[in-house]
Picture 1 (cartoon, rainbow, N blue to C red):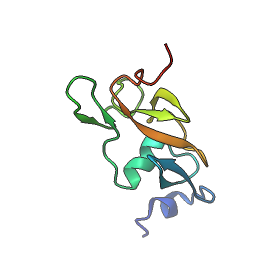
Picture 2 (cartoon, one colour):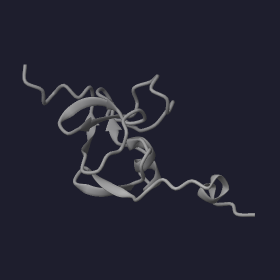
Picture 3 (cartoon, rainbow, N blue to C red):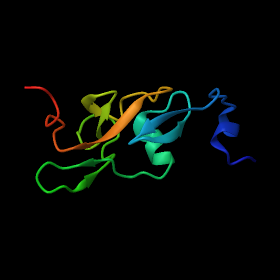
Picture 4 (cartoon, helix red, strand yellow):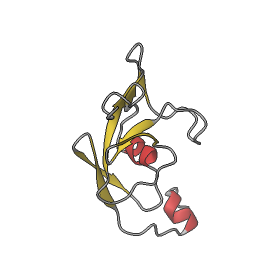
Amino acid sequence: MSRDPLGLVSADPGPGFSFTFDGEPVPALPGQSIAAALWACGRQSWRRTRRTGRPRGVFCGMGVCFDCLVVVDGRPNVRACLAPAEPGLRVDGQEGTGHAELPR
């Protein structure tokens, strides 16, 4: 019996693609969230808290908390666990609330 999840369900997710995170390519599959793709390539944190600078990544994985916030194509405060990974996205780690770079 195959222990490969794709073999178990006979899934064919389609061809992979990549997006960038902090300027580096990240491989992804259709249907993956940004958080899932980052986690799959070994990244466990991609945001720092505003007061103490502590690292954060996926906590709840379903959009309830705000630990997984990233900047997507210049837009801050995107929950990586809910945002679909798409070819060519520019994703960056976020510092604090993500409002420091926004025009006032």
